[in-house]
Amino acid sequence: MDLDARLKKIEDRQALQDLLNAYCTAIDSLTDLDGLMNCFTSDAVFDVTGIGLPRFEGQAEVRGFFEQVFGDMPHHAHYITNFTIDRLEENEAFCRNYAIGNGRSKDRQVIKAYVKYNLHFVRTTDGWKIKTFVEDALMPLPDEIAGVHGGD
Amino acid sequence: MATLEDRVKQIEDRQALEDVLISLCTAIDSMSDIDGILACFTEDAVFDLTGIGMAKCEGHGEIRNFFKEVSAGMSHNGHIITNFAVLTLEENEAKCQCYTIGNGKPKEGDAFQLFVRYHLGYVRTSDGWKMNSFGESFLMPPPEGLGG
Image (spheres, rainbow over the protein chains, first blue to last red):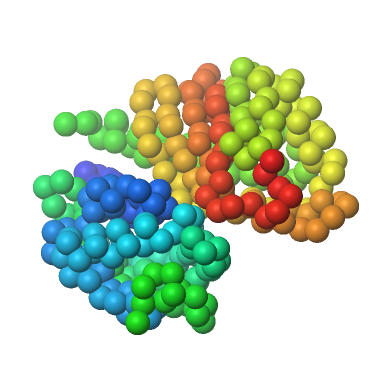
């Protein structure tokens, strides 16, 4: 592999991590819906059925979910670790990470969730975006999660 | 189009910025290496913890005194750093942020945990990247009695 291609691989890896950080910064701002939606493709799938919440398709549905979450939660903090790339190709990438999701609702319910994100990224003309976001539990989840995030 | 040299330099800079932060945590968590803490900061650095209800220190002298006092009261410290992000990176300065789980156990009293964000300003010096500003804000409400 030539030097340019090797460098591009490192830059892509950083860009993917940057995108994940931008996603966390936006969800933890609890206000920046535009910043959050900028992380996703227009046809993105946001699937949180693995933690007892719904599956959303497309920007409108994903935005609607976060509008509700931002309205309900005065505090969020998503700590990201164990980022790994399973496959990186020219225009798509499959990655995973662990997250410790902390939250506190308006009625002061405190949540801590140990989860895994399964991420499918695609390269667009506006940089890398999340096309599919699937979340699974690593540890048993607190009952309160459905209560504060509008699960079934 | 950036040259290969420029692109490599940017990667090296990003890594160096994160290395300074990890050095800072290592020195803080040693609870003895105050010179190691100061080596992460410029002489005129502003270390501002007012965002979490604590002191604001200006310059090496004040930062040294702060850590001398704080370290003397602690039996354990563990600052876990995640979500490191470079927000802006220019030739000689950078802005970064990270999330931190600040674990501590005072000599007298119970262990505590703080969920915070660091707001970091860096400048490139003849001795490598250093922090010239350090701010902190809560991501999650602090335990009762902490955080001013």
